[in-house]
Amino acid sequence: MALDLTTIKRSPLFKILQAQFFATLVLSACCLIFDFLVRDTAAALSALVAGGVCLLPGVYVLAVSTRQVPDGDTGFGMALRAEVGRLLLSGAGFALVFVFVSPLNVAVFFGVLTFLLGLNAYIPAREAQRRRRRH
Image (cartoon, rainbow, N blue to C red; front, side, top):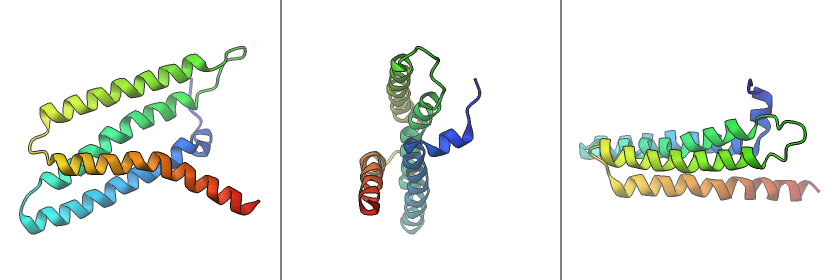
């Protein structure tokens, strides 16, 4: 079943992932400048890896949730599959990071991850506020 790009772009998840992607790039660039000044590479790598751990499960949920629901189906199975996939991808991402990424700046990793996950609440709240202002 092919994914429709216009359906994906209309999804509220797309806006969240888009914001997380650009925030990852900006934060990684800032950390890279910091790393250059202190001659260390752990902060930029940690920020970039945190973005990957946050973005990959979100992209999976977006791909699964924008599929067309078959007639007569509630879509519950698809939503459950998306969330279980997100959980498994997140767990695998954390495991891979802590096993294979060295050096890792744990404070930067969890700081960037927390910021990116905070966008999951901020973006929909901002969109709701914009809609209320229009009406």
